[in-house]
Image 1 (cartoon, rainbow over the protein chains, first blue to last red):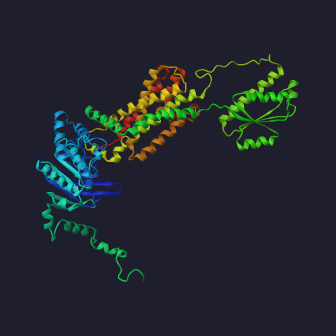
Image 2: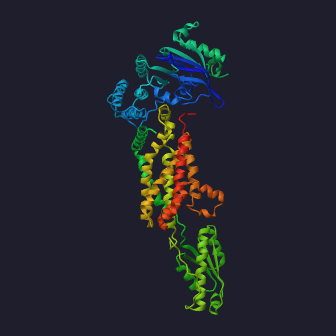
Image 3: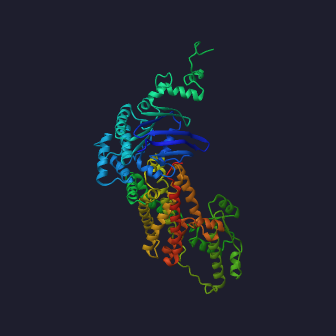
Length: 266
Length: 368
């Protein structure tokens, strides 16, 4: 077994003139929960989409479980479960139909299929709603059903692209409990997020900004690397360093919003 | 190709169709409505051309000539006017499409055995109407003149004519088979034009790309349910076209059904290719229109292809519908079989296979 399940070296991706990922090198330890943290448009999704085989890298190296993403992406697909931010369920199919569909696509069949589906439905906490159309489920249920679909083929790696976007805090909490359980069973989890509390829950995090990794380490290491109170401070520090602008002061530029002491008339 | 993955795609696609009853109903109603609507609307038979007459002679002979015109099916006599200016005004206003001016002395000349002059004016804005009016007007006047001059026993040496396959030259007989092809093409292209694009818009395609599913399984799997629906549509269009508009099928109906099935697959392949290369439903819609419109004009549905410039003729060869029109007209009107149609069948089949192969190749299993 490899010490690192996912490895990338100087991975790049550009769309025309726009550089989305600008030389990312990652080493994701087997069995860990690895977070990629960064603001919207930082290149988080593009990075993991290259690992899943959804996008072809422009240059650089990347491998998943020793398999090359350029030449062996079909083999990677059997080992990898992916869940996108839109949950990608068929809303006009029932809970059961969605799970059966993905099970068959992955070649899981017969008793094995029914047993896994039963367990995943129990895991997602949607027992009793098997025949309900996926489109009528609430956000949290949809999210956990999508997770179930991504787990049906017993993947070694679970890739989650902002899985908690748009669900309520309770569902978010339940979801993270599931993530811990899965990690305990030995599944390596790669997750993107822009929530600090979620980043805090990861074993290691990489902070991505404008397509580059600005900092990498365990949450504790990152906080200890300077005089920081928490992760948020760390990242604001790096963003300010990169852009040369104070995040907090940028509001002062918008003078017309400020209340004037003299009142409205001049 | 993995058949359980192929099978589950078919199953899933049937579920989508089944859970969207409105679309399903539309898809079944479309051939019915289109066949009835267009079957009535499209006709090139010209009848009852409005006619006004200025009779400057007012003789028995001139009135008899007018009566001959009025009695023919081609013209309907609207009114008598007092001078030629009025005819011009009526033509300008579009109230009449044809006018006759009979000069003074028409009757006398005819009685003397001379061929008298009269004038038939035709509104040429619509050449189809004008041509019919010109020919039939000439014929009516000549026959009348000749008969009066030489008496009823007069016989001109004439060339005997026979029109085959559609002896009464009814345009419905020509239009309906083509119409069935046209309707079928439009419906089927639309059926599959959205098949893949819907998944792209909803983001489910991402989830499919990360699975071991192969493009050939996805595209052929999505095709199967629509082959069934397209075939049902063909049956409906064929039934109403031939039964309701009384166009008998002279050839082998089973051959026609079999070849219709092949055409449905080929036309669905056009839609599938559109779906594979576009990113959203708006784009597919536009591309579908860009494809459908030229086929209406270039396939020989309205205008004979023989008169087209070579380049245009060759472009027409790219559409399965061009071949299918030959098959439909061949089997329905002429009653011919495979011995005459094999080239067209080959054309449809080759285009279908080619389009599907391109669709499978063009549908990369990636988002870039």
